Length: 196
Length: 299
Image (cartoon, rainbow over all chains, first blue to last red; front, side, top):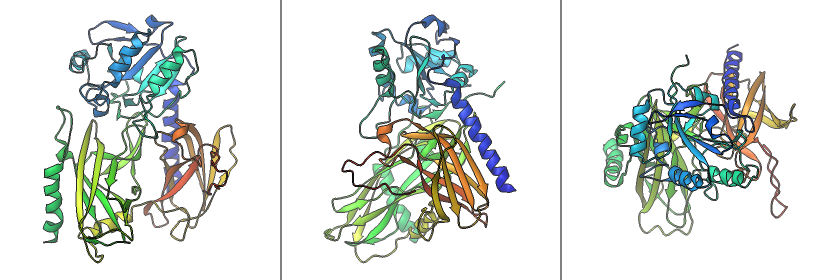
């Protein structure tokens, strides 16, 4: 009796889990969004039609996200600068419920981030993409389809360090299929607010 | 007296070589997580084995992560260093707790305290003419609602001498009981494990035959960055558990050659005691061995 209850509870949890990750299927149209950046400017996904767009889930309160930014490392800003030259759009999105535009402006200044940090404190966009961690990376190809979902890199684990986003962008720009379209993101959980 | 002897040197070492770090706005991590390097033996001799481990004390309501943190988080890391002739085995991960991280996402980890131990083997021809020094570099992510990263470099020295238990041997014994049981051998709660044909494309099925009917069964996969499993269903019929899942390969090159990922089957035994069973779950076909001779061991 008790085992049956527990199992169905576990099952429910796991099914909910897989449902959450199915939100952002590779090869499906990336969810549209319209958000304000740290300076109050409106940014939409639609305005970058025909371009490759990178989404970086951000939270300046998370040591794992900070670990990819100044002063520790410059993983994100370097990659952004390198691919900006090739026409790739890079957007950070903060879905932390307690953060606001003022906080994001301070974040951009503190970490010397020149690209937009979008205010998604209501969490709609994060939930639509199934963003789980900070950082959690997504790449949208020029046809508007989701081409990558996962970690920025392999954390230096394995035989060699791999930056998955770098590799996927190289492949997309060469009009090749992304060899590793899905990896497991790592970092702090996204601090979503209550669902309304 | 015993307490003073065991705690004081470690505390001094922490003060001397500890290098904790955290973001400027975060709490002092020293208060959040305390890490000490301990051993179950007071002395060492050539040809012997003993245990070393990092003992974490975690502030209430905060947690550290298992080898696979689940939907978010980072695995707790301990890297040991020992002189040539002294080898340190893999980390022994106690059965973790499972927690809800919000949005229906699960995490695996530890609250209050954790001992991450490993077996040390001293070679027969090791020259035991001076104390043996072992170092541990540990890094962790501690989370509650927010997360704080921490790091410590620890070391201990053991004097040469006849084997005798150290002041912390009871702690090691206590944590030994929290390790998952092997799937084979007399201590295993399982009679057999075998793969079944999947019912759908990409689906994997495993049947686990228990020696005694368990009260509940759950599966904690530890595919890490290599692979994950989803759509897990667990069916229990008396002494048989059927586990069904779909695997997603994140990084084929990081997968073990046998195409299996580690997992722990967490169950309550007939007496209601929570235990774990170590299992390797097939997620991909085995890679052919380079020499063509090696046989892939069974489940």
